[in-house]
Length: 150
Image 1: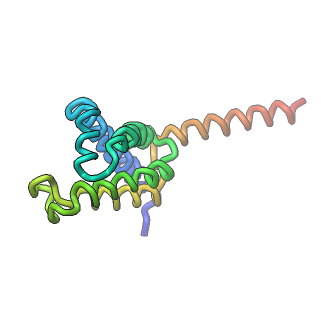
Image 2: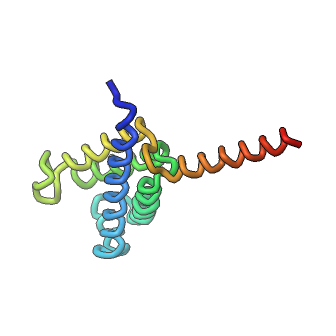
């Protein structure tokens, strides 16, 4: 049984951890490996190097959206192909353990499942989406009250 009192906080923890992970991976590619290095790495995997740019953008923007809790379900599902690409193209042939040389596929698989779980859970507590929605609902109630009073 789901505890409806704590489930929103579980979604918050998962959303924050996954978002921070995506931001960290984007910044690793941008600041450490450099975009040109990421392009070279993608090309070494046999995929067009230019795919590094949308990947870095998806990781950075998607991570920020997850941390803030904006469109969590859609963002989580949108990031699944990035994770599957990492799983299949970069880590799939390196064995199970992520501690293997060049990283195995256990971590990308776990992150893929976490993203799918978050898509099922939704925003959770302290999401910007809920903050904006509650302010919008309050504004609608005030307008409705004003109209009814007139």
